[in-house]
Length: 128
Image (cartoon, rainbow, N blue to C red; front, side, top):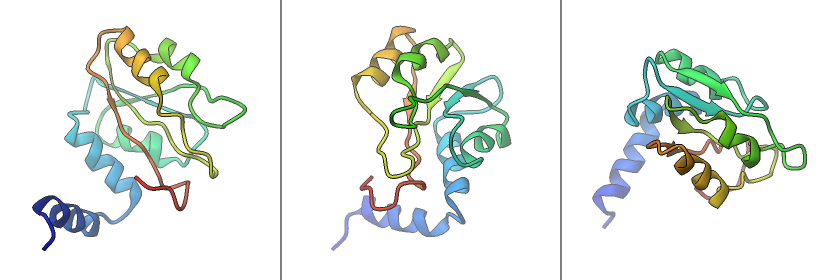
């Protein structure tokens, strides 16, 4: 018998029309809205930046690492401000984003309550 969490996850997944809609809902669930910044990579599908815009938040582009094409951990710290609430690393072109201590360290460095969510649409086969 599936758990209540598994049932909810299945139902929630069926209710989402697209990955873009799912990202928008996830951001809303984290309290993102007007006056909030969401850090996104510039090298990704447009939905990564448009989802925050659709709910009144400001996407902030953080440059990528040219070896991995994912968010640059060294530039991430510079992108975080007191208005930053979410970082959206995108697993891109078959390369998993480095969800390592550098992201967490950068978020804590500014004493913000920063969420980290992932966008998996551009990397088929990766397990969430």
